[in-house]
Image 1 (cartoon, rainbow, N blue to C red):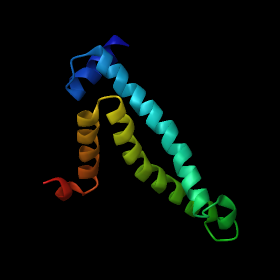
Image 2: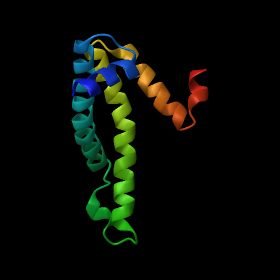
Image 3: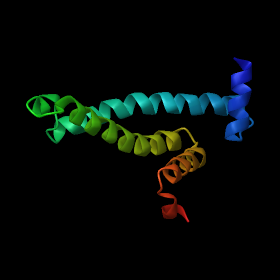
Length: 109
């Protein structure tokens, strides 16, 4: 476990064990929260699983919409929760790296 812990510190460029703990806590809170918020948002706009039952590839369409909404909501919640825990800079850089991977790097130049 210590090996993994030190590998995370090195990869993330941080020195403090406490900061690693905070970052992992933020990831956990954000993951659980984004699932709930995404589900509530899809229900609010009327995209429930029952709406896709009659269509061809109904489950696939529903879960594609659900996964896309989770990914979008996750980014916003990650910044909010990260900021509340005093880690805005780390999570902002994390999200910028993620968006560059998906071709949105020009937004941050």
